[in-house]
Image 1 (cartoon, rainbow, N blue to C red):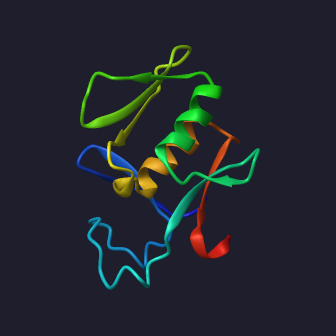
Image 2: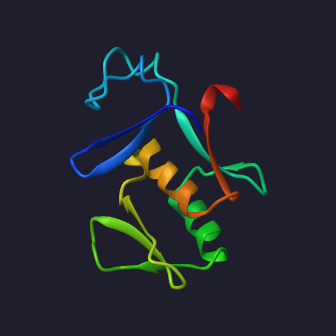
Length: 117
């Protein structure tokens, strides 16, 4: 992972290609020119294509599902202070959510460009 870490509105995110994306987080150009990211489960080399797939992987790693917020999908690991919060709608699952999962599950997940698969 290389790039620039940007802090905005209380959120830190990695901008992998700072020249291609404005630091204010806005999107420019068409989405067809943007590289789509996917979350990959490293041990199986499986692309996570749904929250059902992700939940099975996280549960096997000791994460527990929280049901407190109806607008979010949340997972907590008892042995840590980590909480993974995801938008309820999988179509709103973005690279920032993927990197959150990667950081909290070292060596288990990777974020990859869709074009490199």
